[in-house]
View 1: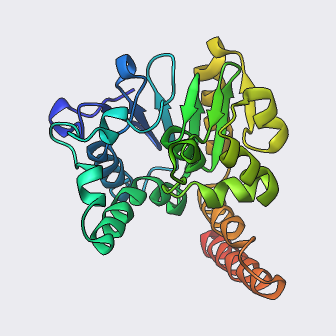
View 2: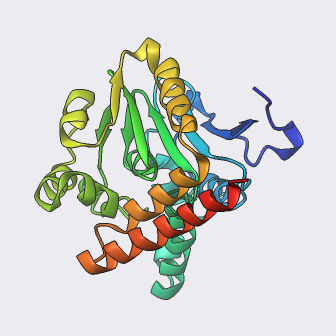
Length: 264
């Protein structure tokens, strides 16, 4: 695997590796269970926005025992954290400015699903709050059998606000999403698979290998067909039947035209 140089490392707690058509983005703060901060979100957004057009698959993974314990608790202290936005101070000011700040943070999550590349999250241990929402930002999820997903925002008097509510509702439906978020309960790997939150559950020791197998299968699909497929499926829930048929027609026409053009 070819790792990006240290000078290009976008954040002290983020590591990138690019090999062929695969970009691996790794949360690298295992001592704090990969807790997230605004500076990390900005770095993630910048990485997502700058993904090379030749990348076909992005893997979101994490070092250590947990995928991500969510928002760093220091962000909710009155003093805030050195070098980070003071969320409570911002919340005490202009509501429009606060909403604008949240919009900046959301880009670290929603940009992944908008990529032409297929994004795969490899999740082990805890994926709580912002960690759960980062996993939901991926198109596909491989969970270790020790994975625990939870939305704890409501127990703090808040709501999930990092782009996770739409993919959660799409995956499990409104009633189940409401129950998961309102109670803040843990969703284990087996239940996640049953609910459609996990595409694959593997033993913890096999998480890397299981993810690699899925990535390899994705790379076997013709590149343009896979890109068109992701785009077509992403529009399906929001489109009317007629609109979705139109989306399918246009995608298929582009693929057939390109196929004919390649023939001698």
